[in-house]
Image (cartoon, rainbow, N blue to C red; front, side, top):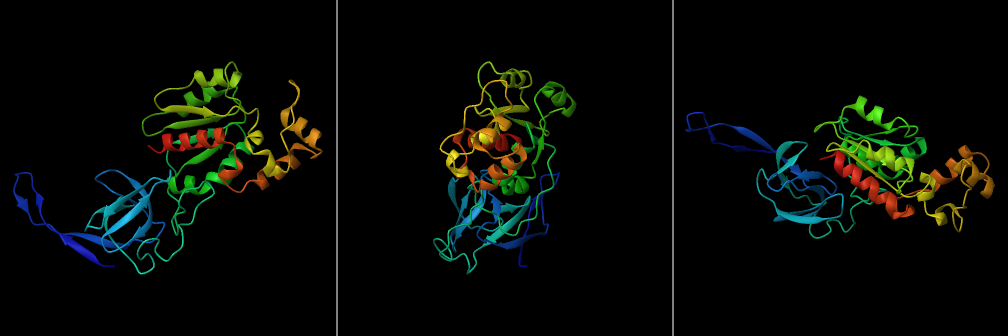
Length: 275
């Protein structure tokens, strides 16, 4: 690994003292996640040449930065990015950046980040499995753990026990977040500066999967008072809810298979807990 030496740090008396600090050179490989310390912009490398590098954040926003010595940070350490033959000019080797199931640039060869204190809570195991299926890559890169609540009845007590704070943010994904619902009332009781509750209007997270993805024209209407998953499986002759879960979750391949309200709700939570 090549390093550069940078000298000159002001001591406590205001006099510049010579010091030596090794700055490693890191190849600007497509998919490498780096941060521009001056602006705080963080994104994956999409292209690089001898003059500059293009970074793309998880929302698809791109910015171009000059390749200067000690100009970027990787995993919290200052580095000098250098172009490689594989990256080249324009789109590099001619291939578009690999995308994850959520649509973000897929980070190649990364080590999963140590889990943050922050958490994302979802209502049940199926919600957790669906979020993992689509956003699992992003969550591992960011070090975010998703945990099922198994219901909203004790949300206030669970939040109090968790103890949210500036370095311990909490995001909650709620089904059927509509005016007047019990889920909405529970959400309103816990929101605060370190707690964000988002959700979607569907009775169950299955309904946030586009009907065409599971081979139906529309989700059936289930009478009030009937367990929604049981009613759906009966109406569609899918067997037991466990059979339905395998069918629904197994059909989802990417964010394109989901309805927009769920996509927006999860993206908001990830942004909130990773601040």
